[in-house]
Image (cartoon, rainbow, N blue to C red):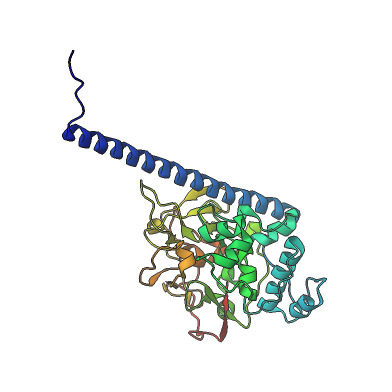
Length: 362
């Protein structure tokens, strides 16, 4: 009888190396598949928002779904919010947003000042229109780690999460879970972004604040819905876009990139309803709303908080062009697949370089 021969050390090491390589490859494949699935859900979310917005415009006389309370329009059943509405301007919009949160989430959050809800809380208008409960998962990207943690376990998130963006007991912390991963372009709610050829109205436009999360609001600003028919090139104008490119392609996903980063390709819903990934390096740079008769471009200073990067280390602050947020010519403009529409660079105007304005958080 022959004795049974065992594995040599070399054979054993080779077997272990082969198994490790196979396991590593399988892990990478599973990670890639998970990233692809999340990206599909994210694009589906944007598609649903777009379809709901189109239905809204049919029912509301062609108006886009944006906040519309003013001193003369709107009525809250909450006395404190009704008092805030009567102050008008951004305060009226914030009162409208909190009113929706209270009625659809049954959370008695306090009135909030210094908040421009239109960019990141725009889906609340569709929540009201469709009579949905809050929070609404369709407004949150599945790769938005902080908001997804809150959805899964609100109590545990506010007590222990390292991604908690604000003091949970503050008005800002209370409103944050009801904001969206997706940002609405400024020309949809700032009425004068598309007031072409009217120099006297340029200083009434919204402009970029000191960082990516703030906006400068002039005293003469008007926040009332534009019409869908105001959009000249709906297949080339971004409506909603994920504020971060959270679905980086490749076997190993990196940290989220800010949507305006030239290396980013954020999921984007255009005004004609189709959803795609747009390479920012190929997008039009946009304009500076207060210098629209020049070739000046708005600069967004991206200085993120840890929760915006999904817990990833924060790189040096980034200065980027305003792209979708500040489209040249507003709703009459083009973001992708065509030259910018330039209807004001030849208009001469003697205007203040920076009109008086207050800064509001989005």
